[in-house]
Amino acid sequence: MGNIEEGWEPFEVQVAIEGALRPLLVVPDQEEPKYEVFDHYTSLGTIWQELGKTGKIWCGEGIAVKALLAPLGEQIEDYLTNKPI
Image 1 (tube, rainbow, N blue to C red):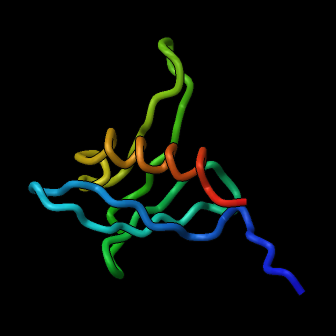
Image 2 (image 1 turned 180 degrees about the vertical axis):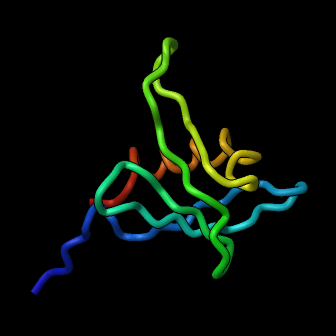
């Protein structure tokens, strides 16, 4: 039987923190288009997109996630756009 990938499977992104690339685990919410971000076993917060006047913008909850909004949003979009079928 084949392995069917669900839309809420966790995935890893690489984000530069203090000049070094760090792997972070992104866990999609099953109910809402939000993503919880983890550094090992510690939650850094939640990130999601909202529609603003200039288009879609990334929003976040949690100090670490807010500090990394742009690179995290870019990595998540890149993963979602290019994820394997």
